[in-house]
Amino acid sequence: MKRGRLPLTALRSFEAAGRLSSFSRAAEELFVSQAAISRQIRALETLIDQQLFERLHRRVELTDAGRRLLDQLIRSFDDIDQRLSEIMSAPAQHLLKVSVEPFFAAGWLLPHLVQFRAKRPDIDVLVDVNGRLVEFRSREAELAIRFSAANTSWPRVQAQHLIDGTHTPLLSRALLASGPELRRPADLLNYTLLHDDNRNAWPLWFKAAGVTNPPTGRGPLFPDGALGVQAAILGHGVVLGDLVVNSQDLRSKRLVKPFTVAVRYGAYWLVAPDFANLSEPARAFADWLCQEIKTEDGA
Image (cartoon, rainbow, N blue to C red; front, side):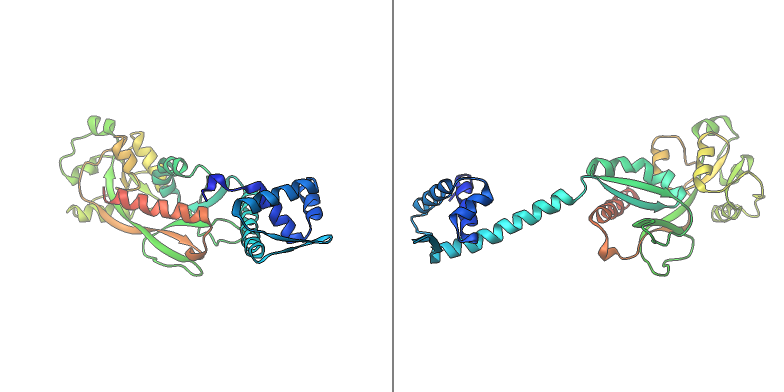
């Protein structure tokens, strides 16, 4: 029988009468008359050409066909009721809290987050920009994105590798056009060099670029890479940026890359207490993040 022709009202009347073993009690449960229940069941018996009840004196009993049908209907109606209850009790909008390292949050996640929002408008992502190691206690966050120059794991959590970090010089187009000529890496020493919380990164890059003993102990310091990148966009100097994290800045031409030399400097990790027990919103975000990073890294 086609679904569009299923006698749903009659099946509902029969299920109540069979479950309660009474036409009158079924009528009370469904807020209809006993005559209406009897009429619906007669119509159902006529449709299937099978008797579902034995009509006895002041009581009814199910036939074998009636018992088989009732068993199926009780299971089906219970399943429908459970699913409806789940849908009704579940919030329409999910809030997912993600702890993110500041440089990654400002450079990569925030520019890309609109894409996740378009894919899953039912999930609101609360981005907790924080450089500390979240302990996942008291629902601080369900996921975290961490950077480490050397660590690949942390106690009491699981970690999945997202992407390796790379250092390469970046500066604004305006500064490149108005500043000293840049033909070789050593020419960067004629610019203001912007530093991220210490002055260790630039010597490593100059060494990889073949510049020996560069005087790099000068230039402003910033507490995190995001501020250094913003300063570079504003034309304050040259920053060591990341090819993936700052990919949007490079595509939009807010920053340009004068040289191809890039130095690896650690990695970004997706962290959770237990990836096997993530909520559905957290799993959706984690899958999207890994795929988006993989796509961008291969671009």
